Amino acid sequence: MMFFGKKSRSQPVEVKKRKKTIRKVNNRGFAASEEEHFLSDFKGTSLSIDAELTNGLRKMRMRSRTLAQDNDYARKYLAMVKANVVGANGIILQAKTKDARGKLDKADNDYIEKAFKDWGRFDHCTMNKRLSWCDVQNLFIETVARDGESLCVIHNGKDLEYGMALQMVDIDLLDESYNFRLDNGNQIRMGVEQDQFGAAVAYHLLTDHPGDDTYTHNHKKYIRITADRVIHAFRAERPSQSRGIPWMHTAIRRLNMLGGMEEAELIASRVAASKMGFFTSPEGDGYVGDDEEEQDGALISDAEPGVFEQLPEGVSFQAFDPQHPATAFDSFVKTVLRGAASGLNVSYNTLANDLEGVSFSSIRSGTLEERDQWKQKQTWMIEQFCMPVYKAWLSSAILHGKLKLPATKIDKFSEVTFQSRGWAWVDPAKDIAANAASVELGVTTRSDIAASQGKNLEDIFEQLNKEKELAAQYGIILGEQNEQAQND
Image (cartoon, rainbow, N blue to C red):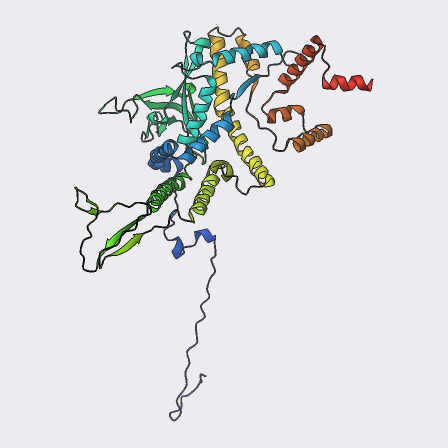
C-alpha cells in the first residue's frame, strides 16, 4: 500500500508499483492465412496464371505424355474421355433450318447433313487425308485431356473438297517461351498474339518441332497465322489465361508414385518367391558349394526340392525370407487411385476396374454423377470445336460453290445443333416409368428423353413410320396395332 504525505524516518514507506494492464488485441482472420509452424513451407503463389504456365507448362505436358504412354491408369482415363465425350459414332451434326412458316425445312436439312457427312470422310476432312471427322474429334479431345489444349488450323481453297480441310497441329509448335510486346500495342503471350483485351489476334507457330531430330537450326523460326484460321481450345481455370493445363495435372504425382510402388513391389515379390539363404561360420571359413562363379569368385550352391544336406561342423544356415507381397499393398493402391480419380473427376470404380463390394445404389449414384461431368465436357467441345468447324465449313463451301445454297441466307443455314452420345438407363424399368410419368405431367419432352440417349426424336418417328409401312407391306400386325384390333 502506498502512503502519501511526509515520510517517517522511523517507519519505511512501502511502495508498490502499479501493474500495467496489457490488452491483447485479437486480430483474427482466416485460419488459412495464419502463420503457423506447420504451414511455414506452404507459401502459396501470387503469380499470374500465364507466369506459372510459362515456367511449368512444358514440364507438366511432358510428364502427362509419359504417363499416357506408360501408365495403365492414365491410358484408361484417356480412353474413358474419348468413349464418353465423343462416343462410338462421334458428335453428329443435326441441321435445324426452318422455312418461311417457321417449320423445319426437311429438304435443306437433309442436304446440309448429307454434305457435311460426305466432307467428314478421311480423304476430305484433313490436309493429310488420314483422319475422318470422327477421328479428328477423338484426337482433339484426347489431346486436350493429355496436353491441356488443342490446336487446329483451317485451310481454304478451291482444290479442297467443299473448299476446306483441317490440319491438327502439335501444341509444341506454340512456343510458351515466346513472349514480348509489339510496337502496335499487342503483346505475344506464350506464342499467342493478343490485343489489349486479351483477345487472340494471331498465333506464332514454330516452323519445325522443337523435339524433332530431323531438323537442326541455330535459331527458332516462326510463322504468323491469323486467329480466324486457328481453333485454339482449352478449358480456362483463371481469367486472362492464355494456354491450357493438362487435365491430369493434379493426378500426375500420384499416378507416377503408384507406378513406382507397383514396380518395387513386383520386384520384391519375385525375390520373395525365390527363397534363398546363406551359409555362415563363426571362424569366417568359406563354405565350398557346388560351383564357383567365374566373374567375382562368389561360391554358390544349387538348391533342389526335397534335398537336405548336412552342413560341415561350425557352419550354420541363415535364411533370407522377405515378406512380400505386403498385406497393406491393396489398401495403398486403392487410396492412391481414389485420390487420382477425384482429381480426374471420374469414379474410382470405373478408373480402377474395381467393383468389389459395390452395391447397386452406390454404383448408380456414382455413375449419374460421373455422367454430369462428361456432359459438361460434351457441351464445351461442341461450343469450342464442333460449331467453329461447321461455321467455317459452311462459309467456305458456299463461297467456293461446293454447296448449292444462297450465300444471303447463310445465317439461316447456321441454325444447327450437334447431338452427342447418350447413355443407356441404369435401371431401365424404373427409368422408363419415371420418364413416362414426366411426359404425362408435362415436365419433360420426348425430345429431351431421346437426346439423353444420343438420339434424335425426328429420326425415331421417321423410323417408326417406315416400320409401320414395312409391316403393312408384309401383312404383319405390330404390337400397338394388334392391341387396337383386340379392343375393337
